[in-house]
Length: 316
Image 1 (cartoon, one colour):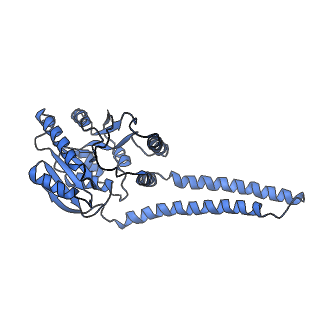
Image 2: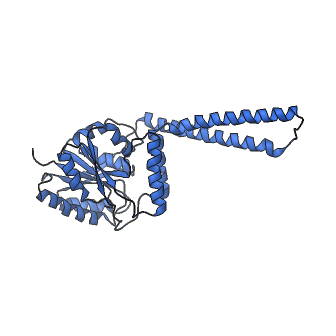
């Protein structure tokens, strides 16, 4: 059996400042591992433009015209990072033996792909790229990121600690991944659900050479919330637990009021009335909002709208 046909799937959104550097680095690396016989000569690099508003797609088209190893895929609008990954993967599901996904900023060390290919050749169907440390992050980002993984694992979501979307998947795994049809994609949680033999490759995350991160704090929090509500009903159970606790507290308050009435210590007071009222009303509104979040996700899923729409492909 010869070397595997590999395709790199790289989602891009407003990456005009770095996309050419990314192309140079990946092309040099690809030529090296092709020369070493690690991957087949017809392996490719797929750049997926997720509805960029800058010159990202123009640059991708130019690269495709000069290099037949580059495949360009443009989505009709911005569908989001996870949908862009799926667009690139599903577009080539039947054309390659294995697939590697990574971000356009190349903060994930591309040299780790060599170890991924080696583990795949030895039987691993999924190889996760895992950060060996977070020394390059600020204290706040390191704390929040690691807390996210811990909380998700406590809620029963099968995350790989310190793994993002840098991974290798075999074609068979991708076929199984295609059976997961939810609109609210959270690939870090979905891929481990598939099973199969998997391995890890550890690497150090690099600094971003140009451009700005597409995941500021607000977007990271929304991404985390989507992952939690898409994969765990634990927040719903928390509502039940708080409801039971509120009932117990309410019964204690009732007992206190009755005892005070019997002992003749009742004194009309605004504070003793408003505090419990505000507490219970506030919690009820939170509970209704949380339930509404889950109902909203059900609403999005049952409509069955496409996760992405491909507008154009080049060198496909």
